[in-house]
Image (cartoon, rainbow, N blue to C red; front, side):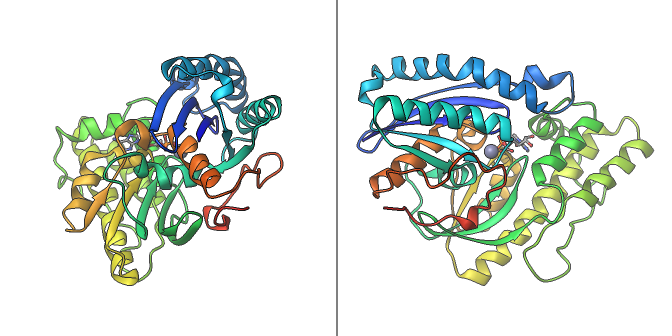
Length: 332
Ligand code: KG4
Ligand code: ZN
């Protein structure tokens, strides 16, 4: 079975082809970062318009990379949520129209499920069950993954997502947007112990997280200590990573799970990966390009669901809010 994946939930347009026998055949992506740069954040209307321009050329590019044609497709998987409504609509209309025209199923995929499953694009792939730390620009979740569509949220951020805190801190350090990776690079030359930033909500039991106070602490330090950007970046990163590691350790103890999966854009952070590896459990994560938004994870999720007999779209339209723990195992 060959499944086309289309991703357009935020500021990346992407297309990928995944084959149940041969794995990932092709993937192509266009990032809109330059388009939104001048505004310091994603402008939804501009994002939608750019998805309209880019999805077809990207689809053509991935078909040509895999030496396939439209008639080789057995199903289409498109991101139906969560994300920006207008941006999602572009991919949903594209995916469903294409499915209709080709007479193949169009399957709605949850973007967060895509992130959770992205490590399965790699080999060795983690076996179920595993604990997934899903950290991106929009979400910070600790999820027990017991099978396809069997997701239990154990903890999440009560305010900013960790990626959002990285981005806001990066912005105030003058590193542009989204600046998570640039902040991590600057942190290399700083002292992580220079500032004693808080490890929010680690002094009380539970797996909930909070990152807005940490961002405020970084803001205060930036104003009070001009010229100490690298130390602030390193201390911020240390505090954010420590907080995540403490919560993951707790979640492992609570559930007895023995495998850690790191997914989402912040999962590209080297310090986070190394600190989680140091816990001594087996750790799995996708390559950098499959941590951040991509269509390979959407094609993979679509292929797993289609292979299990889900050959229909479980949602009508799009779902800008779509909690990952509301998903079900494949529908038949
Ligand atoms: O998963 P993703 O591409 O998009 C969402 O679905 O949100 O994640 C993007 C987030 C941004 O906040 C970005 O700054 C952050 O991931 N990010 C990083 C790193 N690379 C990307 N944060 C920390 N360290 C990195 N190396
Ligand atoms: Zn994402």
